[in-house]
Image 1 (cartoon, rainbow, N blue to C red):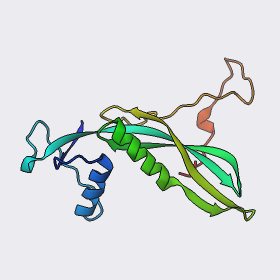
Image 2 (tube, one colour; image 1 turned 30 degrees about the horizontal axis):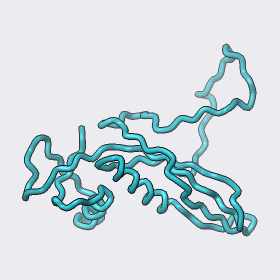
Image 3 (cartoon, one colour; image 1 turned 60 degrees about the vertical axis):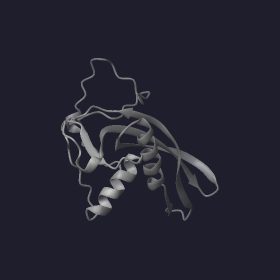
Image 4 (cartoon, rainbow, N blue to C red; image 1 turned 135 degrees about the vertical axis):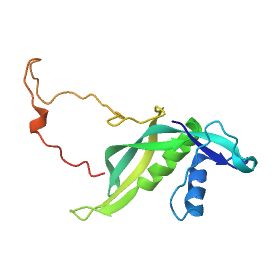
Amino acid sequence: MLLRLAVSPTPQTSRSLLRRGRREHGGRTTRREFDGQEAPHGRTVVTVKWFSAMLRFLIWVGPEVRGRGRSVVLLRAADHEAAFAAALARGRALERDFVNADGEEVRWRLQLVETIDELEEELADGREVYSEPFPPVEIAPVDDPRHPEDLHPGSSGV
């Protein structure tokens, strides 16, 4: 199912459309679908799609960069350009400053939007949005019996 929004004929990004929708509906976004129907009041119908974006952050501790971080976010946007604008806005919103346990100032700053990918119309339960191969810590034989059900996951902090 594609999401279709009825919008005014003036050009706007999907971010401003959703912000306006939240303002007009008491902080929540209300979406109306128009499956092959004419949009009311002479408005244009914009199809909104799912995108994933990988954001890269630089982690400053005091005056120097001590690390990098990645975050994958899901976005709804009309097209790739609108998804890029939304990814930049989300990345800036995720920037943060705090003092660590050693009393040092830590700053996370958006470095770049690494990737933007258009996803399917319907997001299935368990849909993979990111995968990263990395070298093993230990080399295990191919027939090594691993039991992931016995290892309980931690929290990513999201």
